Amino acid sequence: MLLSEIARTSAEVAAEAGRKAKVNALAGALRSAGQGEAAVVVAYLSGELPQRQIGVGYAALRELPPAASEPALTVAEVDAAFGEIGGVSGAGSVARRRELLHAVFARATLAEQEFLVRLLSGELRQGALDGVMTDAVATAAEVPLAEVRRAAMLRGALGPVAVAALADGVPGLRVFKLEVGRPVRPMLASSAPSLADALAKIDGPAAVEWKLDGIRAQIHVRDGEVRVFTRTLDEITARLPEITGPLGGLGLHDAVFDGELIALREDGRPHPFQITAARTATRTKKDGPQVPLSLFLFDVLRRDGADLLDRPDAERHEALVRAVPPDLLMPRTVTADPAEAEKVFADAVARGHEGVVVKSPATPYAAGRRGAGWIKVKPRHTLDLVVLAVEWGHGRRRGLLSNLHLGARDPETGGFVMLGKTFKGLTDELLAWQTEKLKALAVREDSYTVHVRPELVVEIAFDGLQTSPRYPGGLALRFARVLRYRPDKTAAEADTIETVRALAGI
DNA sequence: TTCCGACAGTGGGGTCGCAAT
DNA sequence: ATTGCGACCCCACTATCGGAA
Image (cartoon, rainbow, N blue to C red; front, side, top):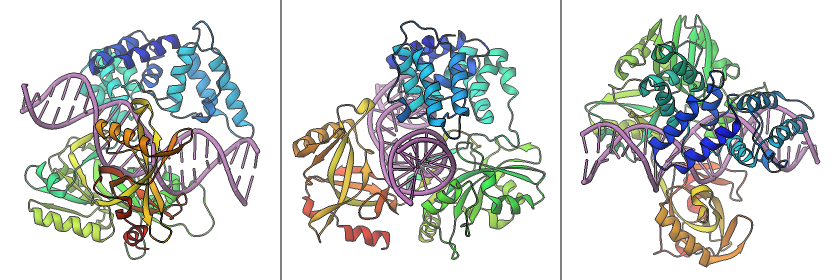
């Protein structure tokens, strides 16, 4: 199969507005792929690489050789070349990767080059990724969508599942089972603005669990051998001796758990997220003592040969309680009383944790999906901040001023201290409004940032403050989003940096 | 006919590992 | 030693389509 056919399909998908039309275009490409190519075609047309990553990013794509005039590259050739690029390391690797990359691009037409740039930079922008492709695989192979979805969640990838579906149909898909040692896509939670909203979505009693600000961990145990995987299914076992040791000593024969890793202080309160993230990301042994991570388990997917994925939450939790000692369990309260649920929420927050997850005791483990069975709730802070500058948007926000630079008032200097940026929470209407408003306030503009007179006040919601090496105040907002503009306020009435420091406890 | 679930898009701050400077 | 880059942790929110109610 020629790469040009993939590039053409991608353009076709991008041009179609409806999801069904996108699915049909993708399914057409899948049907004309050979058996050996289907996995690569699925990956490319859902914005992924079979290699996952090959060390080529935005910077490596800035300058490219002239395009070829006629399509000649095959999908298999591109896949082989990308595999080779991904394998390059050591001194001179940057130049070598560039050389190999340019060899591929020199043989690509302009349309193919543009597709490859979007693919490699992770910005396919065709309105179809993994979810739509899952639909397309079901359509092309003429099998039920639920069968494809389940196989993909158990396999942890869609490519191999597509190959099986196209070759052997439903029987081919049924071969995929939960295996100890092969991570499945984790179940995700939706969110609600308040505990009452979350409880309203669940019939009868709800399980209310602490939500910790840590790293998601899927734990596989076979005969005492422990392996740990992240949310994106990367293995981090070797970094966690303090977890694998004790867990391996529990005498578990066969189990798969879901939980959270977090760095706790001596008093049991959490370290800032940055400490947990740094600890988890560190591969090599460093000098000096490392902050230990603690593990809190909240689910079990398999125990001693029995798959529990389809069992209700309450039953899985019973199995979890039987399988591990209490100090490994995420604190959990099952209640039908909203007041008691509020107490659990308040207690979790008072102990420095992120909030709670409200779960329906009836829900199965819907791996890889943001099911309605789990709902997270976090407290929300707000500040009235001043827009200092704004960046031009990309994609569907091209031509609009999108990403706001936010500052708190500094009464000492009469100036403003930047605390972060946000582009979230904006409706199309608000985007259009702020574009006009901020253009009128512009004082100077560089390549993609418009600096403005600090006059516009905006109400910002955020989850918390973190220390920042980037901003002059040494503080940055975590997960800032726009709630509304405050045309009733002047910049002189905006919140001050002292207020922010007090919130951060400085 | 209206409602709502699922999905894609738009990017945010921070950290580590590696190669180049 | 510092810088730039790629990768990967955490994440909120809106727009849209299309099936469910």
